[in-house]
Length: 219
Image (tube, rainbow, N blue to C red; front, side, top):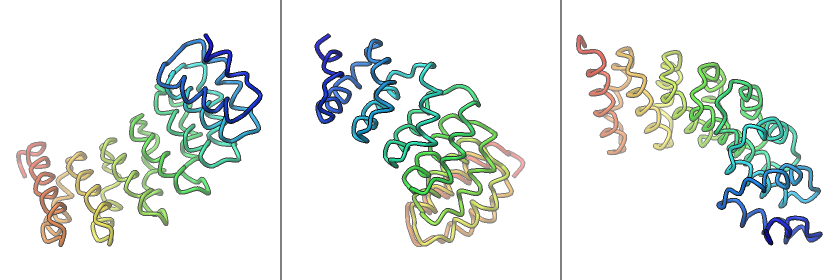
């Protein structure tokens, strides 16, 4: 009760701290103040209020979270909102998340690529394939991971291209995605990856080849 009363404190620093304390408690009564907090002039308060909504996972907050993900002036608020949309079960959040893949902040784009994979929305595949050309490898890593989760056969070509990227984390995710997709057309690219300079990439490549063989006994 005292925490919820303190949400209305006039000091933004106090308000932000209260929302931060409320977040792990998942108190249903914090929904209304958190929704109000989305319009607070202080970005710190908006960040924490958005975080509370992500923890509450209340269907009624999807619309406001979508608006924040697309329009908030603070990139960290947008990133938190994009991540919070990960509890959605409806394709209605797809436009906001695909919009976030074009955000000016790479951290928002990275979050969007990851959230799309968690939601397993098949309509996201083409957008994630485009995200594999992002200037930031961190965004590509998340996009590759999500394409694997979505078992996106259409992504075989862009994932093959990622196998020659200088960042080994991206090569690892591409290899893992090939295994999850399980399409035998990836075998030639994976066989080439068996010569990768990174031992982890080589190990993951062997696992991916085994996954494909299990899914396609004729190969």
